[in-house]
Length: 61
Image (tube, rainbow, N blue to C red; front, side, top):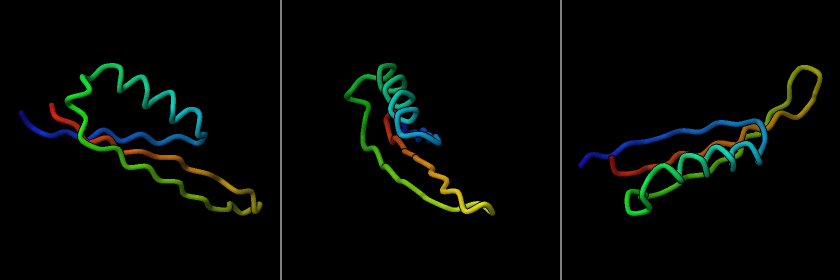
């Protein structure tokens, strides 16, 4: 049994939640090892804030 990584990247927090939940429904909870979560914020030329919500799931294949 090997290890795998699945990366998610969304502009909205709720979209990340939906994507993660859909993925987690497909694997057995015993396969799950860890989930890392990160938020990045930047400003574009118009000084509008842009958010990036991301998560990495480490699991057993």
